[in-house]
Length: 224
Image 1 (cartoon, helix red, strand yellow):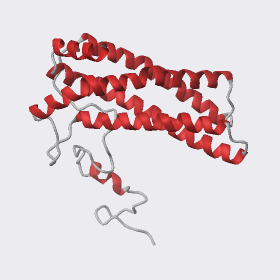
Image 2 (cartoon, rainbow, N blue to C red; image 1 turned 90 degrees about the horizontal axis):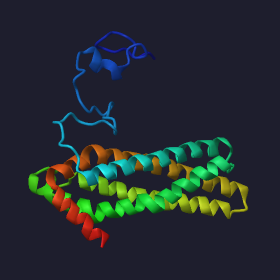
Image 3 (cartoon, rainbow, N blue to C red; image 1 turned 135 degrees about the vertical axis):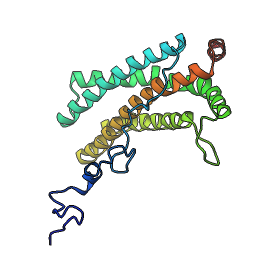
Image 4 (cartoon, helix red, strand yellow; image 1 turned 45 degrees about the horizontal axis):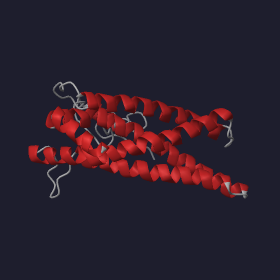
């Protein structure tokens, strides 16, 4: 049986119902369930004030960590395509990433949780920059959720790769490695998206609601 679009008189095969909004001139409809916003898109807003030096340094740190994560992503691709063979190149990408994760990513998450997030959360709630739920949510809550995912996925990836190396059964080893790679890929994406959100949403808010002297004082307290 052929289904006919009652409005156009055409077969649905020829007139895709998901494109009807465009045909009707409704291109301006936003955030349709069939066309969700890009996770990396930035809503139009007024130009932000220049970032404070400490925030610029954190933003520069993000660039280096994203570069390491991207190299790890490429290493993962070659590892999978090579049927889970650890070449020297792949081994270096894995080692560099997990070293960076332990020495830079996790300490930075701790710094954010202890220094930046609590004060910014307080200021955003006072300024009314939050959701209208019974328990108001801010951008800080979203980024704290990222922290949980980064810690969980990092632990799962590292432990599954370690477990696979100790398994003698080939079938079990392949299954564990497949799971490890899946977790690692998700970890890379969460890290990249988290830094993007901080660079483009969180840091401008910090600059708006926390002045330089307050920020300097917060960093000094955490470093004691």
